[in-house]
Image (cartoon, rainbow, N blue to C red):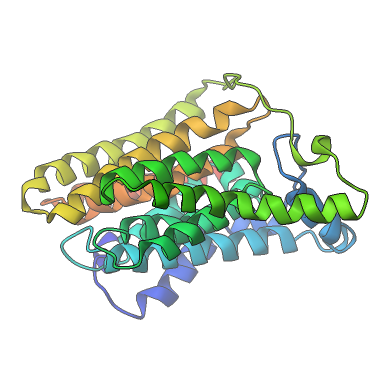
Length: 327
């Protein structure tokens, strides 16, 4: 399977759909109806309320929407990574890795506010990278800020990705106070129109817009299954990081900067769920996108492909065994 997705073959897009569907088949047979938490934004509450009656009658709609989001995120980001030439050849390994990674943690396959946020980040991160030597960066910066502002209506802590945009400006652009102000205006623009609408309609209330937030370390159950998932997520990450660093000298300056921003993205995605005390494992799906790039690098650059093939099939076997024993 790794060997197949190493090729940039158009048929792989259809094969990827079947691959992901089989990995996530139990979520269709045993659908989970999502519940909003105080960490979620008001638009996510409205989305669940809108889908409520139909969703309870046909709960399969929730895993179906979740899988469509996961598949489109995988395919879109895979294509954008290829356009940015982050690796030496185009392939489908990143998309394969993303669907495989998300299958390791059941909560990452539920329809959630952070899964919707991932769709925005799939769009936003490549555009942060494209600011390098862009003749008209202000439009891109404003659009990224606008997208992050709207995204925070689903999951409020995602507004902190504005800091990632700031790091991208430092990495890819010479300092310009105008561009920083454009980013700030972009992220505040949705809030301005929202506050204006609520004020004119007499519904203005900060309590409705701002969920309860506090820094609180999550509590994990460190059993065998959890630790195995961590190993299967971390080992390919370390392999991919090693190969990326090993090939760093051959990379163009823009690609090196993109790799640096990717590492910052991973750090933000791992730390962001800690800013609220209601974070479950589903909120760490934010890290699946940057993780999948490192996993793909490990699968692509490995000289002895049978080792990464073995690692891939061991991961698939673990996922199947978890389904069988309902872990």
